[in-house]
Image 1: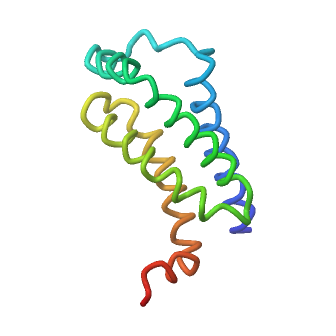
Image 2 (image 1 turned 90 degrees about the horizontal axis):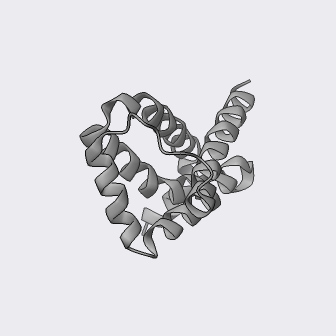
Amino acid sequence: MKKIILFVLCLLTGLMFINAGLNKFFNYMPMPKDMPAEMVKVGQAYMTIGWLMPLVGAAEVIGGLLLIIPVTRALGAVVLTPVLTGILLSNISMSPSALPVSLALTAVVIWVIIDNREKYLPMIRK
């Protein structure tokens, strides 16, 4: 039962990251009207750096795909951790209303990391 729940949560989380990453390439989702002005300014500043948003979008798409596939789930969590850290920090500082969604995504990725901890141990052992 635990594996089924984890698979469903990873599927939903992965699809959310894939959608967000593809939006960075194709801009098919409109910007929310209630987005804080500070967050809009930061987003516009990120857009001036031509390579940054495609890099984040690629990391989100690749990490989301890896998170969905059970064999590559541990790698997907590692790929998504820096992106998720940025999402959390920006939501904490500029848009606390979006914090519940980012905390839920973080909880899924932390569960994946804990569930696959034996795969990470060789990286830190001598």
